[in-house]
Length: 113
Length: 112
Image (cartoon, rainbow over all chains, first blue to last red; front, top):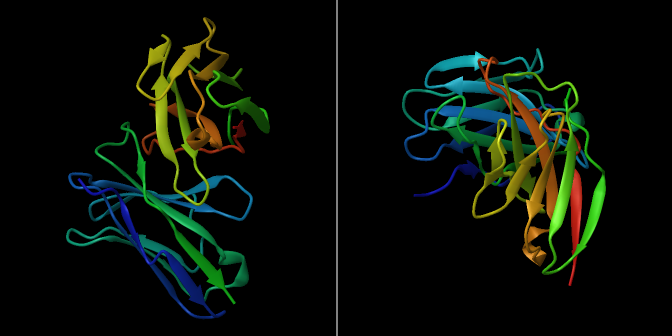
């Protein structure tokens, strides 16, 4: 059973461009979480999604950030008009249910020039 | 904000047991105690969790104080692969999203 997959693993964008981060949960998992880790800091929760629904987006910045988890295909975290402060590692986790163990992907490391 | 307090770093010798403490004095009755660890350049990895009773699995043991205000993660024989940041996290079953709130964790260094 393949683990959580994230791509790309590394992404470089210039200020003002868009970044699209993809997360494929483990087989059978319908719950996806996104976390952000700034350099030398702990992970911060961003958003929790189930198929086609956003359950909790309390950690998402109010502007430029959006997330989706369509019925078919991976979950997408989209960052519009990136700024240098968006440079971080973005981790996706999946689970079979809200109270179950979360399995994390290897992360996408975003660098904004 | 994280509701747990952990030492910033700890050191251990290879093949020796390691006891990683965590204080959670404001824990509520619906909080489970979870431990995750993050190896360098990787995503976090689940280690163990418990509510009131001590727990054992193939990776570690979790000892929970009787008043639940503290807990200890026990690695019975540390290996170099156990060098990581260990996070003690409270998950509230009353929180509909069950999100993980990470603190700064304990960085474990293992000496050969």
